[in-house]
Image (cartoon, rainbow, N blue to C red; front, side, top):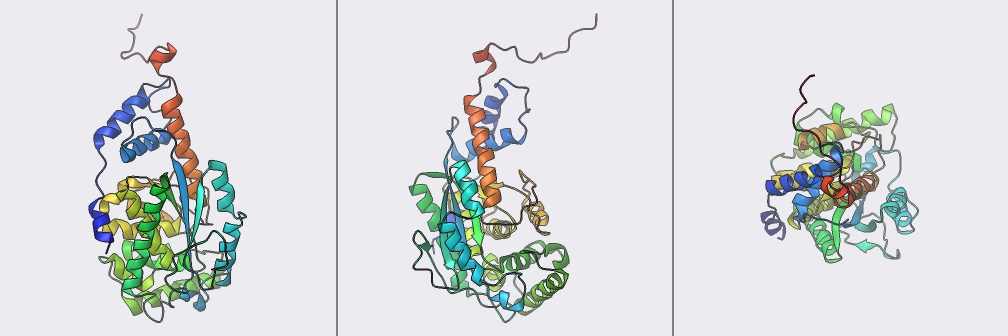
Length: 357
């Protein structure tokens, strides 16, 4: 299994690099700290990459697609067929993720982790299909433990390929009708918070649909009894193939020393599992935004991550992550292209207050 060796290569960030980066930012022609979170973002990138004079890295959004058997319980406002249809839309460049990725110059790679239909005819699709959707988790485990492990391994492999292709940042994206139900189940297990607090409307279910969704999650947890201390137990019993892939992306990114930009609730649920497997990988995560899904704030609090944005997004695909890539680019351009006080001949802040006269 490649997961253990990957986790062993995940090292803590060197705090000296954070200090050096902040010292460089403090010499720029601005009041200290005046660029706020952008300074923090630039320093984090320096510490992750170990490059004290970084250029803007190439970025890839890994949008993983899979179906969920639990959709048979009426937990979504859309049918499972939409997953395959949206995969085709991604590949044709017509989805929101395509628009935002073009804006920031990011590459979008669409990966079939377990879409119910046969997508072999789609040009540009990366096929890593584990199965034709997961099983219905109210009837038993969503997948086998071996399938859960394989899904994580695929995510690691995708990051290895991204790095080989010259990428310096990866972002998490996903598509899967029913995956907010799986993510809510994972979050309930990993945080211990009530299902009523964690479960949101996903694709936009009405009040009756929301209550049904909560009952389905309660039933799935009761039947499967996933154990929070065993990430693969949780993933196999109530997860999804694409969620496992996201876990692998997080572990792989940290092992390769590149930032992993998290999207929304589904990516957050995956991060809870990844951090359980390898706590140090948290240092490599950038929380792009807090989504409108009820449980996402709880996830971010558990991960001790502050989101860069709060735009009430709930689309997924990697859209919020793309917006954060733009902020990361801005932070690095400011760090490397602004003049210092010495370069510009600008007086620095006085170190003592003048005496009263």
